[in-house]
Amino acid sequence: MKKIILFADTGIDDAIALIYALTHPEIDLTAVVAGYGNTDRDRSARNAAYLLKLAGRTDIPVIAGSTLPLSGETPVFFPEIHGEEGLGPISPPMSQEPFQRRTNFTKLFQLIKQHPDELTIVTVGRCTSLAIAWYLSPEVMKLVKETYIMGGAFLEPGNVTEVAEANFYGDPQAADFVCQNAPGLTIIPLNVTRDALLTPALVDFIDTRADTPLQQVIKPILDFYYEAYQQLEPGIEGTPQHDLAAVIAALEIPGMFSYVSKQVKVEDEDGYAEGLSIADFRPGVEECTGTGCARVAASMDIGAFTANVLDILTRD
Ligand code: RIB
Ligand code: CA
Image (cartoon, rainbow, N blue to C red; front, side, top):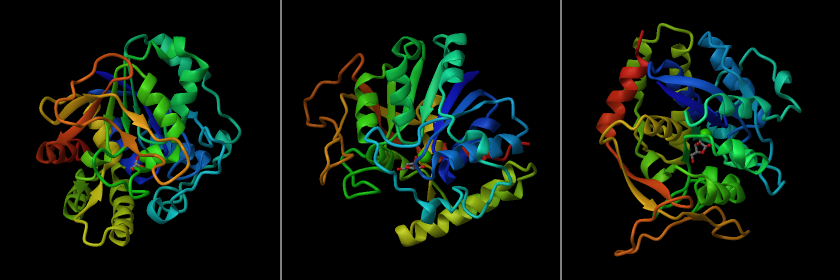
């Protein structure tokens, strides 16, 4: 059993990653830390709580994460991609009030201390909450077994600017801190996740097996996401499951991902390159080791990814 704490900015692809984690028989989802990103923090936390409720898993805590990047600047949200509430056409019938003005990592630190060297953190949103947790208590965070983050774009165009991927661009200071300081770090970047497509035909197939309230959310939100992506990238064959790819990577399924080890920096100065993820890919450059050195995914077996997603998301 893999114990995972998911740090999410609960928009649509985060929701699919969360549904997958809740459904997978080998994942013990220990908590969700919900921060701003695709939507504001309170909606993000409410959306996570709603999905947990649909799954009958209100025992899993939703921890209210960060509301702003470390710069203190007002974040930009993406209703045109993730919907007004962050879940496409769905307006969750739940209040955001329990999460308002409640950033508090007490529960997070308690869980990590209860399970030393057992917990995997998977961060699929801005890195702010994770960086704050490290600033607040490096002693406790060192008890985390390993960390996976979805972010960055290496030797590839970005998705929010010409050069930057949305999670790193949304808080480049936090992303740079995490890349250089989190031990046991694996990065699943956009150059891999942009190929992790779920086509409408696959979504329709999943929907034919959708017997539970949780599974029945998948098609409406992915249909919405598909329409949004048709505006962004006309002709794209499906919707990129960035965050799901990161959760699946954490399962370490043999052969599904290939990696290179790199020291990664994130450009955190204002300007054209803000949010750019940087590593040395020149021929002959040796791989690194230790803290400050991340495994960076270089490729993913799309066939194996698709088969795995269909298997898990259609389980009874
Ligand atoms: O760049 C893709 C990432 O940005 C995903 O995590 C998506 O949910 C958004 O947060
Ligand atoms: Ca996300």
